[in-house]
Length: 509
RNA sequence: GCGCCUCUAGCUCAAUGGUAGAGCAGUGGACUUUUAAUCCAUUGGUUCUGGGUUCGAGCCCCAGGGGGCGCACCA
Image (cartoon, rainbow, N blue to C red; front, side, top):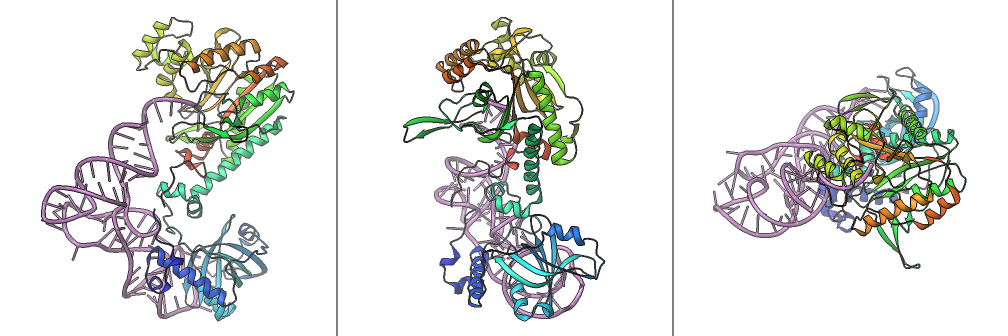
């Protein structure tokens, strides 16, 4: 990873005859001087492009081999390959839309310009004017009449065939990864399509997009350790948000009825193939709706995104084909645990009974855990890993759901769901707790846990209670881990493949 | 945080403890229809860092660093 000394500072003589990165850079830097001495600016300000390469192919892709059109185009892109053939040069030009061959004839461009083309390096950006043609073999090409260097690449590109494989380099130098790895470009295209699709679906249902603070006085809305920062002028501690929830529900109190936000949240926890310290959540809230409405919305959002982003609802998970268009299973957490261990569980059961059950299944209980928390741990230990097909796990215990409304038929459970696909949690939603008196009691329980040393617990958010006192209508809320949805749909196994610049330790230069 | 694996030329990869190699890129040459062009010639190394064992270390041992995977935490 370490670079050699900056070639521009070295005397040219030794380096120009050598090889290696420093020599390569020195040679290319020397070309800049030569170009400038000849009146050519290697970093011009702009280029007038008449067509993208995709447009050229769309318009002329079917012309007959060995023919020329009279279509004059100006195209631009990066030179990816170069094949010198005596007085002819073939080059592969790539822009955002496509790749097209350049056909450069010494007889057409003249000796000087031909020499400039021969001096181009792979990775250089060029702008070209010429005629659309097809070679004898039928390859759609632009027969170059004029070529301008648009930006000189000083550093050599990775292997033209194998690309970059070292994950460290790929993530640190995403620019190089994107240049040479088609799959990397594709994953981020899927990402764009999924997010655009979510927005369309939500707009279609009358939701409006909002932006709420990232700097929070109290990091609430989820159980997670926050990043802590400090505001100098106010001389106060602030936390980067761990969820969007509490601000968005304030907006429902304000009468906005349907709101959503797609934004980054930050959790000061481990990094893994499924976790990045900053990741993207979509949260939506809908007045007059409950958990069942949110379940329907979740399914619609993800199935629509699949169609929009990858053109199919069939995804492959660990070699298993899953059709997202099939109806998704719903099952209560307590029933899934019973299914897994053959014993019925319920938060109303005696604590000791659940503790020994947990111990039987390898779950070590912390002293402060109540029955609800133990059931959740039992679920994670025994049932969660089986949920490959899309499954809405419902009925989470009240104890682990401080912002969710109790089940209308079971005071120990909530009207809540978590969506699992491919053993990964993708979404979470519930009928929102809107009773300010009960919410205060729930917060106070959280405060006790926090005082007892639970650094993921939050305290009482007095302003949020005040908002509830103005009246939160019946509301259904949803949170979706966008990165994980994108992982599912793009078929990659690490969250780093769908985050352009994942969190890494700083590189040592 | 713990365990396992990994780090060799710009890139992709080789090298039973015995002189560090290949392909691509680069450089020089040939070539007016190539397609990862081809052919000939050729440059390029602090083998992640620091110790140690050994006659001799890319390889074995110890410590450190980066990364990957798993566990834990979590979404």
